[in-house]
Image (cartoon, rainbow over all chains, first blue to last red; front, side, top):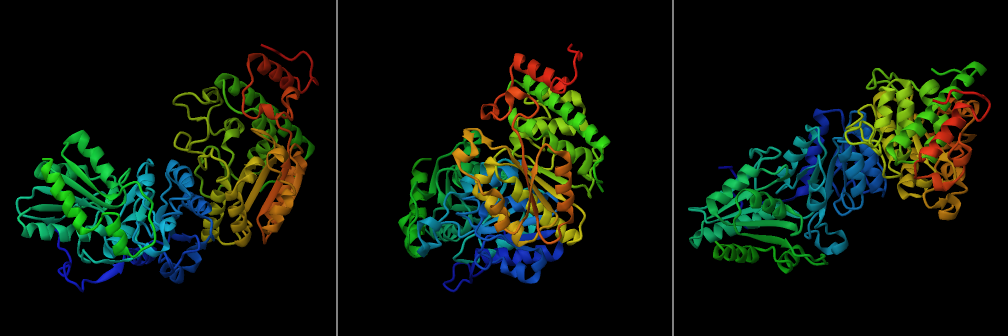
Length: 325
Length: 291
């Protein structure tokens, strides 16, 4: 089993914004490959690209508030051999510039890496306009596109470094808020590979989680284990290409699945899992995520609870799916 | 490096443009769909680029030091395909496969099917951004002295789009001297005349305001076009925008200046009439061989 942060269930577990891991990873990617360039649409610090900008100002392009241009300029740079990373809030990139990403990046098969920060509702106080809960759906539907949703800052760092080495377009989903560190520096990461993060005794339910909610999923698995309900938790960092083997074997072993994501139910990671299982090994599945609603202002905790993505809601979903077996 | 044009070269280019126009008519007739006005209108610009101005090697299309041509308004691809075929990028016989299943010549350019294309295009207004990206990358690699030029060919209709403004501002800010835009100023778009749909004038002033060097030329005059591109190669501190005034449907009187010909192909009769006109150089040559 994967070695996780030993302090994972402690009150004082270290908390770091996932986007910070991206910024550190981009710096490392930039140091190891001079073809890496960074482009930003007026959110350089917010997306943590300033670390790269400060070190490599000659390889940084500030495009201003112009996300459509951001995507297509990056495509042009990739056509000349560069490995461009573009950053903005997920709502604007890949939100506002979706067609430019589809045509000038993916249709052209240019290896542009799109980092969408402030994804999910946890960005909180800014309100619904800034809470991207559709980004997984709109990126995973694009051919050639790889979609990664890291669970903590360390995984984001590794995902960023790994993305720079691929020849494909990649979408990396980042969150703004401080997020518990679940993994360790030594936890391996590979694009396209899901990882078992928790294995309860005689698992009866498999939880598949992506992004920051993995922490709540692990807490639920720990709690339910004490009640005698065995849960196995899969961290699905790469949503496309999907690790079908890992998902199918989890379904075969447990016979019931709960998917957990800070995203719309429609078209998200849970949908990708359902598409896979319905073709290969159908089992009852419950979906934790946003149910066809826009976000609103509030604290992270208030919103996670309101939109039923908190530990209590995950427990209810586990119990419900058990009755459907 | 391209030189000035002498009379002999101009004559040669005129005949080449005429061949390309004929190919355009033939391929549109075969495809039974596609755009007529824009491709005919831009035949002279494409001819000058591919047969005089470009640093390129059709037999080695991935040559690193080539100039780049980004066609932003992908719907005029018949002129791009015909010109590339006549220049030797692929066999002229491929032209009759336009828009057919499995063809290297997709309805709008797709580089997965034709890898010698610099980019896929069709959705309007994103070509200039890509050209800006190419110019930025070239400057990172080769500095401001780079001899490479990135050409972006655009329609006038797509100047209505916000993304053009975004790209125009960035290129001005970055002083991309290795970037040359060419606008096909033919005054028509699919719904009608540009100045009725969304007035663009004063168009040159918009580009000047974004710190571009702007040159307005007759898009069917090889000398004017060539001088403008030579000037663009020489301008040091700014990107250059060439506004090429063209006649949509140029070369076939029946098609000229009519927006109705923006998005439809000629039928058999119309194509025969057009080919007759082109092969006789507008009636200058009598008794030409007609099948």
